[in-house]
Image (tube, rainbow over all chains, first blue to last red; front, side, top):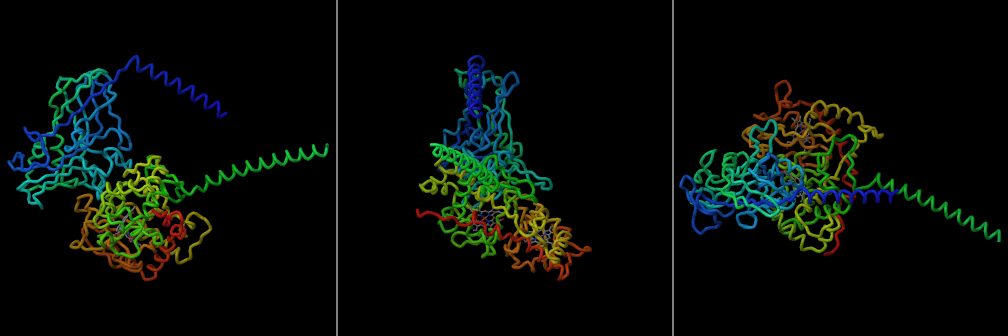
Length: 267
Length: 358
């Protein structure tokens, strides 16, 4: 009985295998598309640990940056025909989550693999790690807790972290600390906020073409100046140098979502 | 000749009988093992559904045993002086028998009375303020808290990776030698989800397993249902909510649940704790202010303090307190003592493991 079962299994898997390889040859030649995240402050390139306060916010307050990291997740690409390529997400965080760390140049480029051929018109992604992933328990890959982008007391990932200093900050050591996070919502808790932002950036007709021979790269700019001055208002380092709880970072989270845009495409 | 044949035949027959019996025994023993596999997660009949994500972290003997070693090993703290078991001890249902406020590395004093560890697989929110919503993320809090382990997750992973003993244990448990934070947390959770306390006298009574409660205990149970079970509900003895049970007036209200919800209306509210093994887990309340159950009952009876967030159910005819008579208080205490689970606090699976010399 067992032998028969094994034989059937082998036959069946061979059949499936043949099916698959045939499919690949005839209909799809998937390719790769890269998303490059380039962090800037207005017109200057972002540099960490400058010896002086090299940058300025929209209010003219000087600052420098010592740490900038954020999570990008659940990436989708829209094709000309309206269909989507969805970057697969793994329950344990090992796929579909990307940590962009200014200090690690390699992390600035996300490689989307196995993308069906075609003309793509827009990209959609989330900034952060949302509630559904939290229910899966301990994570690995870019979501490994030893990376430290995590609030242990109010468990959840920090979606976007910026630390630095400004001479006008009244905090100890003139520190600037902006940690954006928070995904919890509950009936009866009016101040619990979901700061997960999903944004869609269109390629404005300059559509990357994916196929087996081309691996286009989309150049996305994240402007830190807009993080401090956006749809939710102007953040002053003098009066607001620290944000590290969900409710307190509602405004910077809104600004954060508006700080990303597509600059150009390398075909 | 014939005689020899006959003996051959009996030999064959006996061999066959032995074989059949042997096989039967084998099958029986397999069955028995299935029923009483000590590493299988079984929901007690009087319990609700579990909340833990077993699909991502199935329990194995090796994973459980690894979690047990980590739980008892001070390697998890910065100066290797404190282990989980320093503050969570089995003989008191894994609460802290010694300290009102728990003590971590460098004798630093925490701000909260340690909670017992029991029935964690059935809980949605952890800690007094409910800030953690998955069991896997609970140890991170102890590890990184400056008044507990004062250690970073990365350092612990490095320390474990430097130990060939632990690398072997991780390999046995997860099929890979490399230690990661995920595996550390999964092992600790495997250990903690099996810590089920459901064998108190009360459980055996409620499940009709031949246990009887005395008349005083039964009176206590009834009074408990009338006065306490709106909050300490179900056979977990908690409704899972965050409430203010009247410990302080507005001026002295602890932040409590408001630390997480950032809502002033949640000040002074704390997780309604389970009352299982409550006779063992003194001192009581988030700050350990009461030493005895008698003091707790006096509090509910006539010590309730009015504040903007105190729960309405703790008032009788518009005045604070449940006004229980002396006898009623004693009856409730007698009932609470039936929640002590001797088999849980003596279960060898959860005791300190024998560690090889390293």
